[in-house]
Image (cartoon, rainbow, N blue to C red; front, top):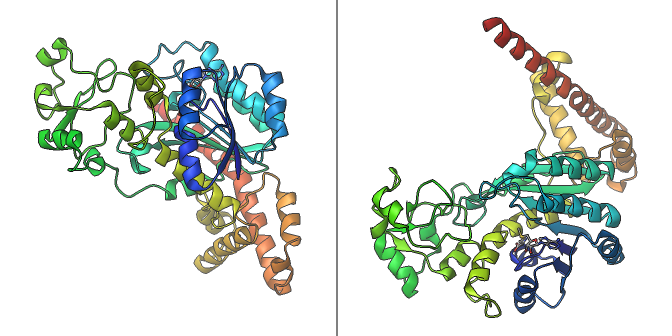
Amino acid sequence: MRVVELFAGAGGMSLGLKRAGYEIVQAYDSWDKAVAVYRNNVGPHAWQADLKEIFRIGPAVASLAPDVIVGGPPCQDFSTAGDRVEGERAEMTKVFAMIVCIARPPWIVMENVPRASNSKSWAEARAMLMRAGYGLTECKLNASYYGVPQARKRLFVVGRLGEQDGFLESALVAARSAQPMHVRGMLRATDPDDANILASGAFYTRPYYTGRGVRLLDEPAPSVIRTTREAPRPHYLTSPHPDDPVPASNAGLLTQGQVARIQGFPADWDWSSVGSRDIDQMIANAVPAPMAEAVGRAILERECGRTIPALQGRFGSWLAGSCDFSKAAVRNAKSRVNRARRLLGGRTFANGAVELATLEGIEEFARLPTATRSDLRKSLRLYREWQSQAPKARQNNRQKVGLIKAMAA
Ligand SMILES: C[S@@+](CC[C@H](N)C(=O)[O-])C[C@H]1O[C@@H](n2cnc3c(N)ncnc32)[C@H](O)[C@@H]1O
């Protein structure tokens, strides 16, 4: 699949998607130094551009007809590490949505800090994307479960034209590892800097404001920020965090190369064109490549029809309660929805009529016995009916809980 990346930074997201098998055809960022690092490592398709110039960039992106537009718009206006006033940087989330609406690729991926999900800018961007026909999966993922030794939590929004919301959620959850990755798993005894950290048994990372500075090697690192590798201030040494497992003065200090690796950059990433402070900033900005790779793979698998979404919620209980289905009938109905979904290549379809019409057009479906076809259609219709009632049931439940709380008060 062909990708255009907006707000590409030093190339963390592009690296992960390339590893997953995508072709990155164009990348944009306004920071000349980030573009230089990107070009040195990912390829010459990166351009310095201010993406606010929507009427110039939008048509240029559309003319490339990408299969996917990806981007991590600036997060400082939303993040805990920023002052959280929604200013021009938050507006970039809407710029991302506007360029998507001009180019209308089949797929989109947006990454940001979890707080972005409650922002006014994302609410407006989401409304634009939904009006343009995208079904959206909005998931908060923890990088340490996606091959990165860092407890970095990030909002990933994956959109696909014509889908139901939440269509990829179960696939992203299934891509998680059983255990989080720890810093020890990244360290190599043969590397002298790594050997130092291994010998200390613990490492220090500068907290942004408050928070724990010292961690054991069998923990993931906290979310990387620009100052992560800085030494503890005198104030921290005299008033350490109460949960520090060892004194900060006994913990190893991470090198810039180690922090880059914690953010998923390979050890041989060429940063030579920029100064040290800019490198720290680009590292902190990045989407860890293994995380982007995992999300990219989940999309490719769905695009190829190799996965189907898990059935949501309490469909079975609804069939048993509202439709008087026996246990066996519930099992059959569920497996028929899944079978229909497999025939549909994992698609969920925002529109039920389009879903059924698409099913009718599939050769394999047409070859099935009449009774089987009728069972599959019926099960899909039942699932739709349940989906249309489920929000009402949840609403009724919330009202009930509200009433009980009000009575208790
Ligand atoms: C969170 S970083 C993206 C990091 C990138 N996804 C990665 O994996 O390395 C946001 C990027 O947006 C860029 N940016 C900010 N405002 C911009 C604008 N108006 N036009 C283009 N890029 C902009 C910044 O220079 C920064 O590199």
